[in-house]
Image 1 (tube, helix red, strand yellow):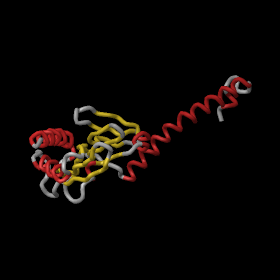
Image 2 (tube, helix red, strand yellow):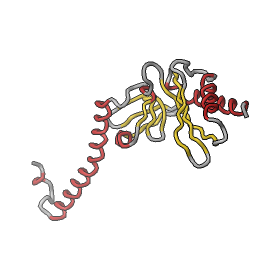
Image 3 (cartoon, helix red, strand yellow):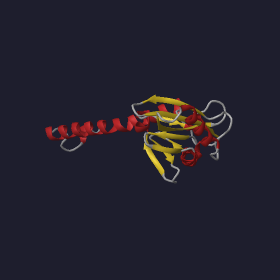
Image 4 (cartoon, helix red, strand yellow):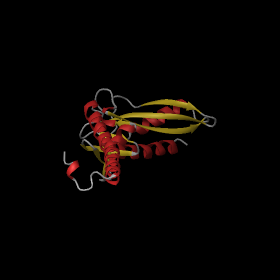
Length: 187
């Protein structure tokens, strides 16, 4: 309504400038609208909730905030990461707080061992290392899968249950040390 009363509104330069300004606002707003839509999708699909331990792209930590435009995650190092919701929605999200069946949460690690080691012994050593690790539950029992048979080695994946997903990193560190100790002890 105020357009005709603005000085110079009838000139071609003013009309061109107003079209350019309108185009800039609409293109700029599409990013904001995309962020808001991604935030709504994340909220209503309940991909994760406050306090859950997640991995989003290369970022791992506990969700401290899920907003309309951003998600904040606190890492194990005490850093707080602010992730745009469109990036979160566009990447794979692993929710470690919901990974286990029943009670407990799953940690896993992959090792490659040459064909000269008997597979039954490898399974026993991996399970023994898991049971020696602080925080790993005895029930359900840790278990091992042979993921692939490559040219020079077999790839084994060990799965174990823990009670607190935020302890995933220290448990994995101790588990790796125990695996090394078990394999070194048995040659």
